[in-house]
Image (cartoon, rainbow, N blue to C red; front, side):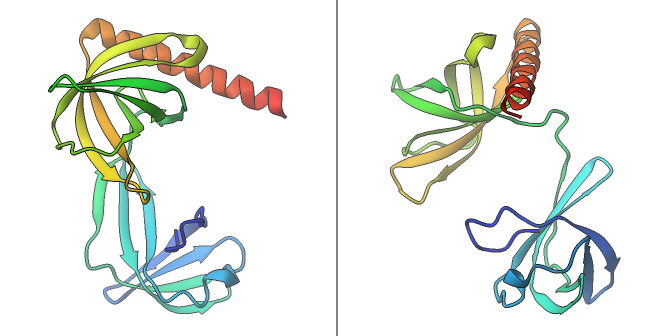
Length: 194
């Protein structure tokens, strides 16, 4: 569950009860006092089986470690990702179909998609572009991608773009290799930092 505060990294809870008028969430610890006066909508995400559900709800009542929320008006649902995203902050080159070439920076990637930041410019959903990027010590890649989402950032000088890679069979194998290599490097870096 997430509050509207930009700095909130979320609080872990479990689904306790669902009714036509309200939803009850249970926290493993006492309900965070910093949320008690929250008047805005909270973002709740629930993973169940192979699905992910998300909705906004308002706080009705708090009791120890139980939170009573309004029933959601709309619930967003999607399948859980087969591969989790790996954070990666490497530079990348974006080649647009009109010949424009811009520098971007990766945020994360999986064998099927990439999220990155680039200078703000009009980008349409389903637009195709070419990306060139390196994954640290694991190697580099060049692939055609299709835009899934483009959102301006608060600064209005940059935007965040999520793309799906359009891969051939050989490229798919290469992306899976890069993914597993980066995941291994990430785990090794975490172990060395401990």
